[in-house]
Amino acid sequence: MMTPAGVQELVPEDRIRSRVAELARQIDEDYADAGEILLLGVLRGAFIFVADLSRALSIDRRVDFIALSSYERDARRGGVRLIMDSRVPIEGKHILLVEDILDTGRTLEYLLDAFAARKPASIRSCVLVRKPTQETQVTPDYVGFDISDEWVVGYGLDFDDRFRALPYIGTLDPDAID
Ligand code: IMP
Ligand code: MG
Image 1 (cartoon, rainbow, N blue to C red):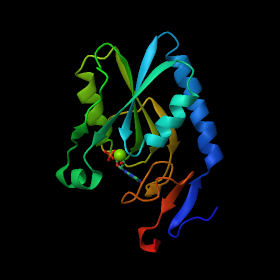
Image 2 (cartoon, rainbow, N blue to C red):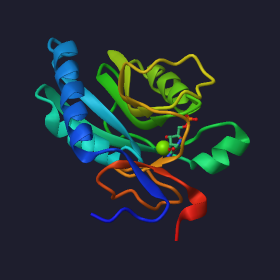
Image 3 (cartoon, helix red, strand yellow):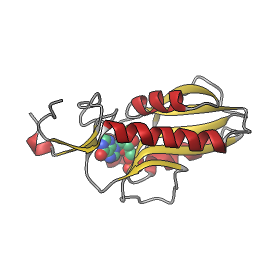
């Protein structure tokens, strides 16, 4: 398949697939006695990851999504805001937050605080990609891939809402795109 201008493949499709399967096996094990978990995907970047991860799991699980205000605006404000909440009540549930990228960690830190306040039975987090740029203390429980500090797209991840549907994760050179 043709790679779009400005994009260079970083994590091929088959490596994503096998890593998602590994994460699912780990999560199955860790939650074997939990009964049911609620996967809470962070829109929009995590939508494909959640779709694949949720299907790779064997334990009882529900899926719901939340949405946050956009990264660009947040970066300037230094804050994060929930603009779409979960429809499933959180109290008493085993929550697994599923996020696309851990960059500074502010988004995940905010979400863990916000949802822990709703008295879940437990709360953990899973990120597809982690960059070495963290400015917070949050430690995700499950990490798909550790990468260097580059902008990545594909497999749900975007640049200006583009490239989400690429089947692989690629690095992006914004100066080289069409
Ligand atoms: P943090 O709050 O700094 O950890 O930022 C996390 C959010 O920034 C992620 O949910 C992404 O939406 C966005 N983000 C950071 N780096 C990238 C990237 O390389 N590609 C796409 N989105 C990114
Ligand atoms: Mg995001």
